[in-house]
Amino acid sequence: MDQTKIEELRKLIKQSKRIVFLTGAGISKASGIPDIRGKDGLLKRDANNIKYGATYEEIVSHEYFMMNTKKFYEYYFNEMIFDAKPNNAHKAIARLNDKAIVITQNIDRLHTLAGSKNVIEIHGSTQRNFCLNCHSFFDLKSILKLGVPPKCPKCGGFIKPDVVLFNEPLNEDNLSQAMEAVSRADLMICIGTSLVVNPAASLPYYFNGNNGLVIINKDETPLDYKAKILIHDDINSFIDKVID
Image 1 (tube, rainbow, N blue to C red):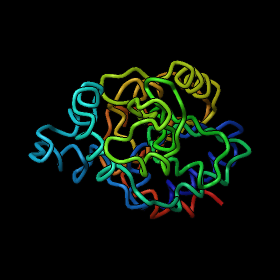
Image 2: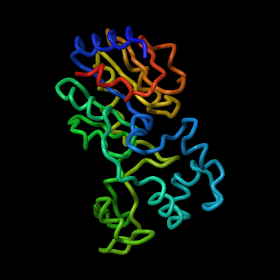
Image 3: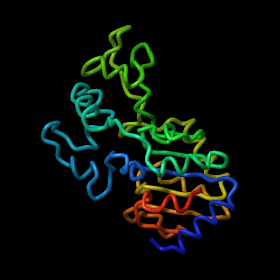
Image 4: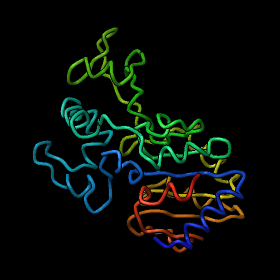
């Protein structure tokens, strides 16, 4: 790791009054959760999943959920639900609660568990689940006890995770909050995101802060050219050196 970049990033974080973090699957890898688009991510691993007769993107889609609810939940419970804990990166970001807002594409809720107070979960959370019929709420622990697929004990309707599946729109309120947070920030730090999935990938275009855009990701992103500081490395290998 370039020590000059570490010192420059430390300086930017200290002098910034409003920081917005945009995080993706890469930040949770150290917690044991696989990423999506990395070299060993779910897209490549499940490019042709014979067991489910579909690719990852097809399985985790609105259409597959509606037409193959049982198979969807078999995959969801077995491959997308983890007993994970926040890692050093989540905890370090939480230490900046007084001036940071976290916009996360992840559904694992690890930022909140780490102690971050201002978190916008633009793709939802596995901890929130709703009956499609009567709209009753269930946490993750509850639906894990209801069988596959989980059905509402009140009305018998199917329960859907409050997560944004492929071919579903984002929550407009969450997206508006995210856009406003980015537009008001003086420093934006993107961590562990490929910056290819819209509309999340478009958020950096709303950023005009004086302290610049920082991108920290293992692989290259389409917005690397816009970064004031660009780091192709694992965030957990240096995060404690950057955030006090």
